[in-house]
Length: 172
Image 1 (tube, rainbow, N blue to C red):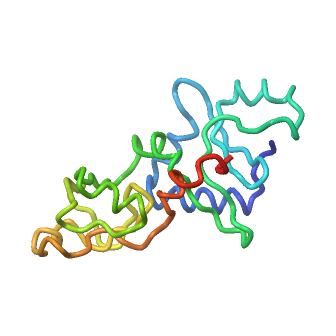
Image 2 (spheres, rainbow, N blue to C red):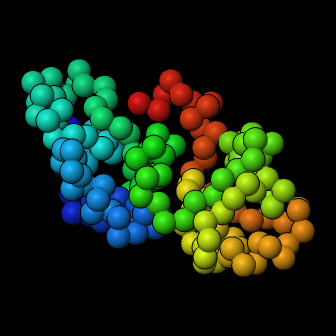
C-alpha cells in the first residue's frame, strides 16, 4: 500500500470534488482522526492514519484490503468511484437524489432515474451537476417540476452500481 502520486491524487480529488465540492477538505482533516488515501494494486482506499501505521507490519502480497475502497483506476488511468464510498461521501455531498423503492432495482442495473422514481432532490440543484449517487444530473430542480413522469431526471452513468451486486467477490 503506497501513497498516491501527484497525477493519481489529482484524478481522485477531481472526481470527488464533482460530488462534494469544497467539503473535500473535511473528508481528510476530520475531527476524530486524520484519514488518508492509499493505493493498493489498482484500488484507492480511504484509511485512518492509525490503521495505516499498523498495516506496515503486513507484507504487501498478504494485504488484501484496508479501510474503505473508494474506487479504482482503470487501465487507461481514469479513476472510477465504487458504491462502497457512498457512506463517506453522503455526509458531505452538495446535491442528493432520493429514489423511491420502485426505482431502486432499475437504478442498480444501470438504468436512468425517471421522474416517477424520484422521491426527493436537493433544492437548487443545477443542471448537469454531479449528484449522489454516481450519476450526473440531467435536469435542474426547477425543470423537474414541469416534466411528465416518464422523463429522465438523472442519467449519464459514472459507475455501474449493479457491479457491486454482480461481482462482489472480485471487487477487492
